[in-house]
Image 1 (cartoon, rainbow, N blue to C red):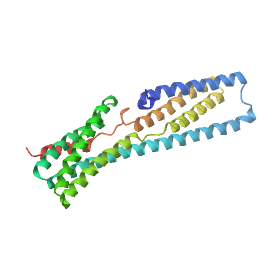
Image 2: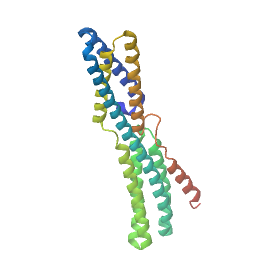
Image 3: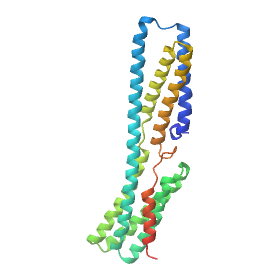
Image 4: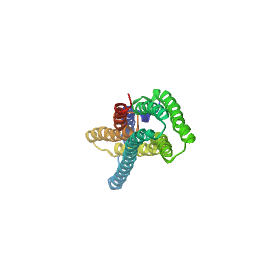
Length: 256
């Protein structure tokens, strides 16, 4: 199971791990003695620098996740626009070929909506059906365009090519996520920061508050980043609103 696909698990696991390393830091301090008074200022500078670096890494990762989320939204709108435009261009084909292409296009847009709303285990069937429909759609415009080439049929072929390409761009955007190496680096820095916080805590009362708050705050940030970056996990998802509107419009305007 890919942990990053489940933001709630990311929160729980990261909070437990970070809290444990905070406790380890406190245990290490008790075993090796408190920090000397003349060293505490340098230690405070080290902790502040580490927390600043952690904040920067979290900020950069959040920015990467938002960028990918926006890209998925934009590609969904672009794909819906290309499908709607190509549906109109199918009028340039001979009547029988155009009717067959429009019927296939209605099935295709339904599969594109399912791609956004389906769970991970349903994807193989959806992808297989989508690939089959793509072959049929391309054949439905390529054959009549080859038989009677004209600028208008060429326009229909060009539009179908854009529709098929847009699906590939969308799929690539859903695969494009924050690298695992970035997650590992961010986790290691967070572990180090929590260890230092635990090691630097002096009074038991102060220690108990800090050792609980910092892991929770960092874990919430991790959870939010994982939620935004995971297309099919969590609650922040790209909804196929544009594709649903296009599908409804095509059915309302399709010949009876």
